[in-house]
Image: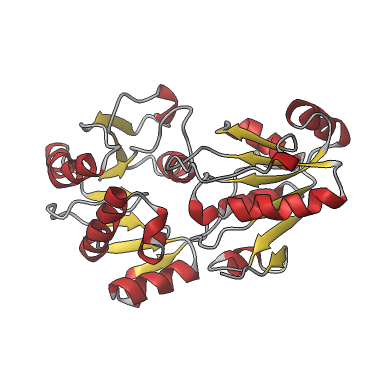
Length: 320
């Protein structure tokens, strides 16, 4: 059996949410099912570390897809051609894209549809692409995986998907996340916050992550206790230039940009607390990474976050 998998988010040094989700699942699926051949479909030259086992066959399916029009071309022409050429029996896409022209069974993961609720949070062309094509992908796929009961209900409401067509598989957390000792925490603080204790946020710098409100809250906290810092870990997803850091805390707020998983695990474990204020999430993997690291969690009470955090977080009420 030939199982084709969309691996276009496996990019060395640039693994974000989709990339880490893809990495953790694909490597396990390939290694645990040696009787199948896995056709790993990349949209650009790939790193050899992503060829997880002998039953993996890497295939480059051009063009590189980092623009909505290229995404459309890839899904409409390049993908079905590759599925035919390599005789795929099944296709799985960890980021929701599938081929509306292929006749083979297709399974897609749709993590959330935030773009339907907050269209202003994405660039116009990107938002148009999501709202135009993801309903088509959802209808075409034989089955949909999603990551929370919240997202499942949202898909049913928005796209009229049959309840039986959607399965909820909650995200897991990498084994690399674990509590740190005093010496490790001290080393991490020395490296990132001049030795000071810190609150940490992990995620892309994106409007729905609500980072501006986090900065405003930290400013109020800092006025009463200036021995802490705020560390923001993640890349700027849409070039969000509206984030403003007040002068009063400019030396107390740090940005790391994207960091690799090993460094992230140390940053998370070294934190005084993890703070997560998004107003929309499909799951929120950093929540469980913080829990695995033994770090206290402050979370917003929106969308799926109470479902994921349960009784293991202090919830903050967001007034939208």
